Length: 494
Image (cartoon, rainbow, N blue to C red):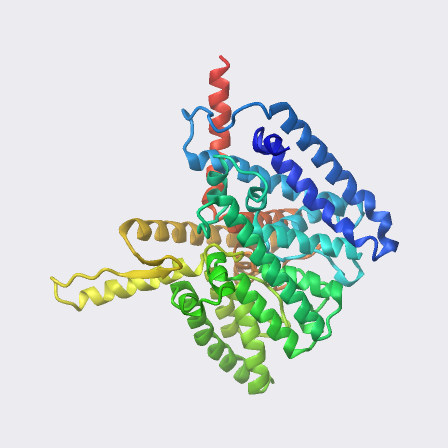
């Protein structure tokens, strides 16, 4: 069996994995027997994917897929195609239960699936309270799995020379252990451990077990799907809000940092630049939001602080939970929220956005550039930053990569926002806000997203969510590489 899974087509393995993941919500049926009528909605797509995956592996397991010719590709190009396949296939298969179960139409089902796997949390479900529990669990589990990523989960069981390219292509940066499989298992163990802690804490403070499971999945994956119409605000509980805030901060942190946290190496944790920058953002944006809410709404200082703290963390962590209607926030506070949506969480975390590290590099490089103009010509500086491995230099290559990504991100943000104004009829500020939420995989909506929205608008938001989760370049490289591979094989058959 080990050889069977180690060899063979990577696509068959991915189909097998996605089929297993889609079948997980069936575990809820013994507890909610009235929902057994939805068994086929999950069993049919899951069984299809598992069977086809096994057949593909069986037909190809004797072949060596690590020694493919390299005339047409680089390692990044080679890894991008299976990654794109995994996400696109997962999105399609994840949408099927909603359609078979008569919960959503095809376009809305695809939207809900994209939002789930990409850990965004935007929803087109009109009445989440009326949705069967099995579908609520399906939404939450898609977020939980999407936070880890298809490739990382596959690496825990299967490893060959190609998976390192896939692991990097999916957006994972740090190696916690020298061995890739051990790294994946450590990350999975940390993830599961925090899930147990989160569910337990929610239960202690009165949340029902099913809701505790779903909200823990959503908070740690920085996603935002909820089982309540008013999200976390439905509980009107400061302890629950505080637990959610901590879980969101954990989800927005680099997995390597979480490993240090699990080992109680607090000194090393707070030495990491991204962690210090994250806490700095909270220290700056919370008081600004408190001030804005206090002078522009009828909230008192303590209520403003409570709303601001939760709102800031849920936004930059790209989770998207809410404790009040964000449309009631004053324009200044909404502007802060939009900025935090664009910044996002830590690299190597489940959060989206530009990422804290890149935002820090921009500020640090700008600061160094200004200081250079006031310093003696002969003075030489070597700016750096701290990772879990120690100090690293901010060199020319890092600067070029950072500004290249941010320029591409902001360009697509503008294009996506303008396209939404054409298709939705909303104002530019509203479309910028909504697209920032989708592109940053945040999930906070100003009312633009809904079941009644047209297909073109939902499609633009879906593209934004996928680009945001896979950090843009992998999507472009995957599309270009697929076309290049088709041309290469066509020429080879002549």
